[in-house]
Image (spheres, rainbow, N blue to C red):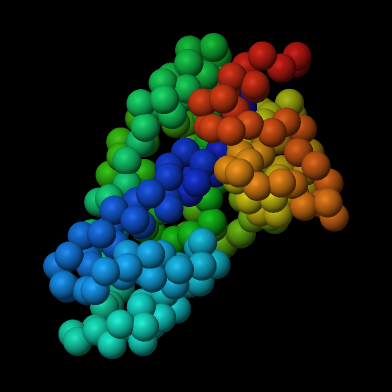
Length: 212
């Protein structure tokens, strides 16, 4: 059966927007000075830092007392939303006969996000790197997600925003790919994706229109 594999953060879900919502509430609760929300976002380094590194950086930047702890994750997860467009795209793909799998790097909060936004009934399989012992761009995570979704990796597509983890991982698994540009240009030193798109919904449309 046809298989569509998707990344989670900045693909199905808008991670940066969720972080901004959390940071706005946190800055107001702690009565932080003007500009603090942007400062918190800077310390995230677009997800390049681990959560522990992010917490430490925010504490050092703002001298927080009491300090921010990893307990912030509960409030952060609650800031995630599944857009109507993304949900409709998943429904459309399934109605067209596609199985859908999520393959995401991360740990337990990834599953918490999925449950919070109600994604689980809309997909057929989920693989999370730190819970499953294999991390993108290793194609093993995509293969595991495919097995759990009951789809055929041959002829599958991968949608994601990360040129290395998602797109090069897709190439390593031998599947076609859609890269979500998000205002960026493709790194010239990497093998390009099959298709580029501006949103998850647009990426799904590209997949559904593509020849088998």
